[in-house]
Length: 502
Image (cartoon, rainbow, N blue to C red):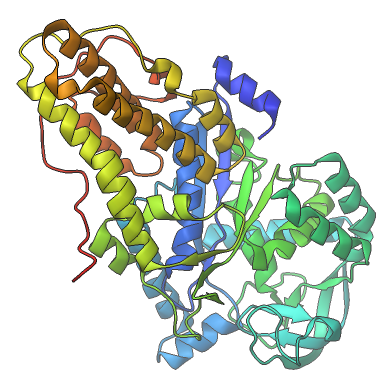
C-alpha cells in the first residue's frame, strides 16, 4: 500500500475497504502445503486489515473446469461433477482446519459464475476484440497453458517439466496484441501494480517483446462453460477462472461489487503471474472495467530445493502438520520463515526449531511467568507505562501495508524481547508492593498488545493469551498502554516443546 494510504489508516478518519483474493485452486488433487501457504498468507493479510478497522472481503475457491480436471475425474471413475463436488469439500475442510477466514468460497461450476462469464465474454466481443481463427501450437494439459516453441525447455513445459502436446483446432481469439502499449503505460503509471517490485521488469520486458492474440475457446474439451455465440466451442479454462474475481463480489450490479471493486490485491504464485498481470488486465481494459490495484506474485514453496507437486511425490499434507504441531504453529512458520514474494524451502526441522525457540521459549514462557506472578499478587495491578516506547507500531503497520509479514513479525518479536528483558532486568519475581504492581502492569499490558498484534498470524493463540490475562481481544486502536482491567487465570502453556530426540 502507498504511504498516503498508511497515513490515512493511521489517523482512522475513515473505514477503508480491502478486497483480497487467492487464486482459485485446481481440483485435480487435494490441497498441499504450497496451496496452504498462499491461502494462509492471504488470510493473515485479510485479518490484519480487519484488525485495522477496514471493511474486508476475502475470496477464495476452486477452479473446476478444464481438460486436466476431466482426466482426473475419469481416472477416479467419476463424472467431472461428482469429482469436483467431492474435492471442493476437501478444500473447504482444510481451510477450516487452518483457520482461514474467507468471506466467500467460489466454485466455477456455480450457475451464477456461468452467467458472469457469458456477460464478460460478451463485453469483449462488443469491444471488437474477439474473432474466429485457427490455433496451432503446443499445449500443457496439467498447467492448462498454450506455449510457443521458444518457451519450451527441452521440448517440455517450462513450468512443470511435463510433456506437451501439439494442438491444432478452430478457435476464437481475444485481441491481446492490441493492448501491448496500454499495458506498458499502465505499469509505468501504477508502480505498485506489479508486485513485488523485482517481478515488474520481467513482465514488462515480456510485454515489450510483443503479445500474441490469445485463443479463448476449445472444441476438443467439453468440461467447460459453453461459448454462447458458437455452441460447438467452449471457453478456455483460464478465461473462466480469472472471471471468478468478479463473480465473487456479484458483478455487475451487486452491492459488494460497488463497494469492493477494484481488488486491492490478487495474491498468486509466480507461475501464474502472466495470466494475472497481462491477460487479466488486458481483458478488463477491453470490458471497460477498472483494473485491480495490485497483483502480488509470491515465490514457490519448495521441498529440498524442488518445486512441490503430486507428480514429484513430495507434496506435504498441511492437515497432518496442523494436527501434529497446531494450525497456529504452521501459520506462524509460513509468515516468519520466508520473505513473502521470494522462494522459500519448507523444512519440518525448521518448523520445530521455531516452535521450540520462538513460540515456546519466547512467547509461551513469557506469558506463563507473568500470569504465574500476577495470580499470586494480592492487590490492584496498576502503574506507569515504562515499555510503551519500546513498541514500534508504525513500523509494524508499514511492514504489513507493504505485505512484508516477516519484517512485521521481526518487529513484534523485538517488542516481546523487550518484555522478556524487562522481567530479567527488574528481577520481577523478587519485587513486592508498588514495585511489583508497576512491573506486572507493564508486562500484562505488553502481553495484551502482543495478543492483538499476533492475532492475524495465530488467531487461536491470541484468543488463549487474552483469556489468560482476562481481557477481551482488541484491535489495532487498542495497541497502547492504558488501565489494566483484566483478571488473570493461568490455563496451561500456549505451546508444548517438541522433543527433537524422539
